[in-house]
Length: 292
Image 1 (cartoon, rainbow, N blue to C red):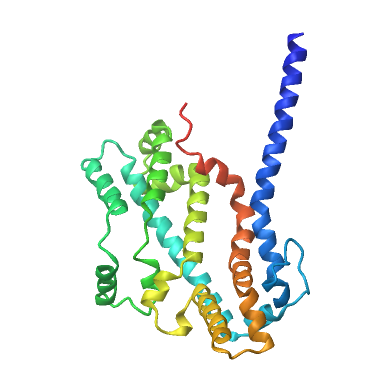
Image 2 (image 1 turned 120 degrees about the vertical axis):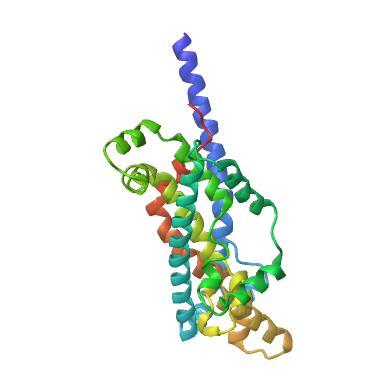
């Protein structure tokens, strides 16, 4: 009787769990599917609010306007370069800093931790930061994008917590075998840290890929813009032309679904990369959540 009661209760739990998770999936996917449908729909259906999950009046005008513009591909290439370079620099700095902070015997460790935490709570402000970047001669260069935000304190603390959880005996054994600090980090610690590294790479890459305000501040030449600035200007141009009365069929179509198209064009690369790091992502984001 006990076994039967348990099995029946477990089946009920599974049913309720399936219903709840199905609801979560539907709520999560619905806005994205709606954006896809709007990006392929004609302007009159979008304005009338008749687009739900299926495109109405299939149309590729806005995609054609964007994709046939050479500047789009130039700025897209810039975004790829900025994201890759910035992510590499951020990972090197964050990993080294976190590894140092994970050593509890390090003198001055508490001061270094609070220096990092202080920057997460307080900042110098937008104008002082702009003056600093400009005085260093970084404006209109890739370094204005990748250097000012090279370390995320949140990511730093997550990596620090992970490194602190690694067995200290492994590093001691490696030191006895003759490895120095850099050798231990490269040959022992990093191979055991694939989960947190993949998670941090994803966090940094998404942040830099979606970033536009930093480029808006420090870049003045259109050839240097990331694709987010290009798409922002395209949205402003389409809506501005429509409100000013310079209306053609292509302009009205672009103004109607330009936001949906830009979301699709910016999110697709991240969606393509995510499956390759997903197996590490779950364990990476749970670091420090379970003590055992």
